[in-house]
Length: 79
Image (cartoon, rainbow, N blue to C red; front, side, top):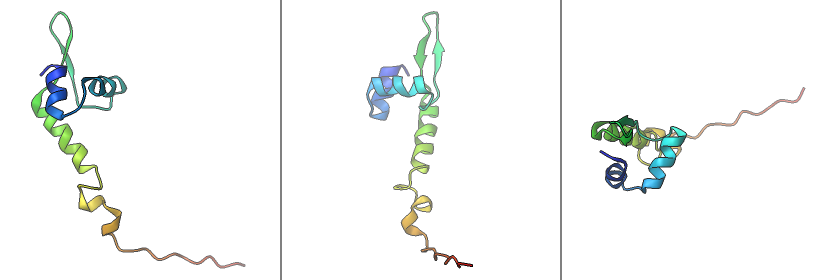
């Protein structure tokens, strides 16, 4: 996919995708052809989106701090 198609597929702006690519935060991309067009593979976009979903505490119950038992505070003794 080209940048425009990938951005539409993910529901984000083209500019956001360019910024993520520049900062090396977004999905994997590569350059193709003599003009060096930036391209994205659909399977890698899906994998990256899945990783982002798993890393989000709102969608991954294992990471949600509200699902953990409360911790007891330790009292510090003065000597």
